[in-house]
Amino acid sequence: MPAGTSYDAAVEYVLQSDYGYGHGWEDVTSEETRKAAREQMRCYRENEGGSYRIVRRALTADELLTNG
Image (cartoon, rainbow, N blue to C red; front, side, top):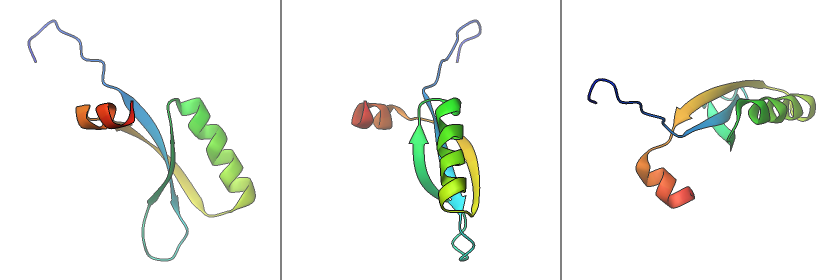
């Protein structure tokens, strides 16, 4: 990327869960904002238990065309 240019990547915040069955972290849902992802994580913790984390993921051009 040339110097002096900015790049605003489209991102999504993915809620991942590890239910402890040896499968590792699995995507549960994705949100457009971190705040929305945190609200979803709170709901999942209250209702299902398990370990959760939020991962910030940059979207590729193909994903933007497919999903947007």
